[in-house]
Length: 160
Ligand SMILES: CC(C)(COP(=O)(O)OP(=O)(O)OC[C@H]1O[C@@H](n2cnc3c(N)ncnc32)[C@H](O)[C@@H]1OP(=O)(O)O)[C@@H](O)C(=O)NCCC(=O)NCCS
Image (cartoon, rainbow, N blue to C red; front, side, top):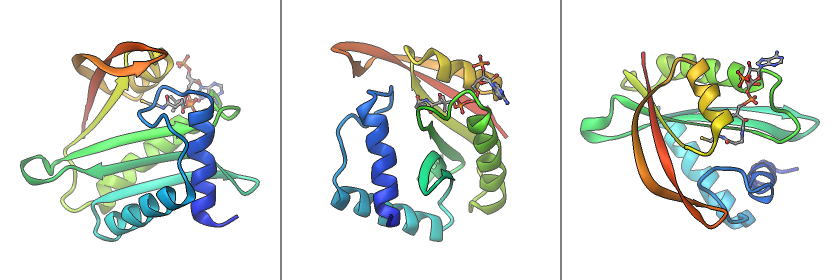
């Protein structure tokens, strides 16, 4: 499989299971190729780091930290997803720790804070982030529409 197809298959597997992430529509190969091009540019410019885990030619985990900009350039935005069937094995914890190490090493400037957001209904993700020492700092109501209801967004920080 070509790289863009692998990423497309991964994101669309999350869309199909209605995972509690922002993306909720299947991505076309064109959209995914464009997204991947943008990511590669950011990585080359030392503004983003990313790791994937693969099993038998399929992406089963993806994580990234991208620097914010301007006065907020000291903040790295964190994201992670593990494919259904590969969760609760420790893969997310492993990838998260490794991508944070990579961010400290590679990103210019070196981030001082890692920031993430999760929907409050995504209890297992919030427990996962608490276990990684992220601290909840804010709650914004009515941010994500999940199964027809508006849910709160939780903002969490990890000081490096
Ligand atoms: C949230 C998410 C990234 C966590 O990844 P994961 O690989 O399942 O996480 P881990 O396996 O490292 O840890 C999860 C649980 O497994 C346990 N675990 C860790 N290593 C383990 C091991 N070797 N054996 C058994 N269990 C283990 C952890 O203690 C943790 O349990 P707890 O939550 O009850 O404390 C994953 O569930 C996911 O991708 N969800 C869908 C997408 C999503 O919601 N992304 C986040 C958006 S904000």
